Image (cartoon, rainbow, N blue to C red; front, side, top):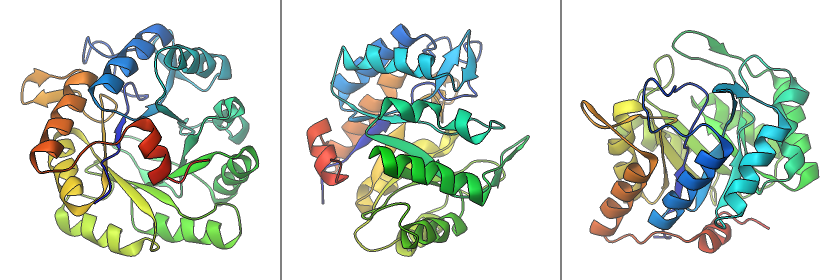
Length: 267
């Protein structure tokens, strides 16, 4: 198997400091946290920006976070284009920083309390912007149809192979976190693609362990799961350290950022 790529999603747009006091919110806090996760074995960071604790797509907020991270380490920076309820240009604002990667959700899905809408025109707009800037998309998959949508984008020349997918499992309203569902997703992507698994809440650890065994990669972090165990709050570093320890126990070494760049076919 290839070495394991560990992505950390330290902040997200939903968790709050009241939910977990360890949640990093300011650019400096995120920079310090990502550095400790890098030291523990993370090679990719998935970034959401906050302003006064609230989610924002402001490019200046993303720029401050990117600067804080780059001052400390050489992890692969992956900017989120999520921005629920925001318009295309606002969703794409962070792409102006030309990160190596950015998220691309290839369809709409129900979240627990809202619909996360990604219209076909928006998906194509974001894809084209990433292509023109030389940014590799991480295709966020909440259900199987999003894989076919990504293949259609490839056929139109908007994204280039080899594709990289992130399977998001266990979110209420979307695809349940089961071994059968993960196997189906893996078998549905084009040959030569790479893939990561993001298990939500209590599903993070079991889905990540399954991914390690199956040859995929993993995402951990407080964006997806604020607990280390029942009634025990996590830190991002704790979650990275645990999955690195598990991987090594089953004989799979962890990729450095440079090794991850090769595996992901980054420029």
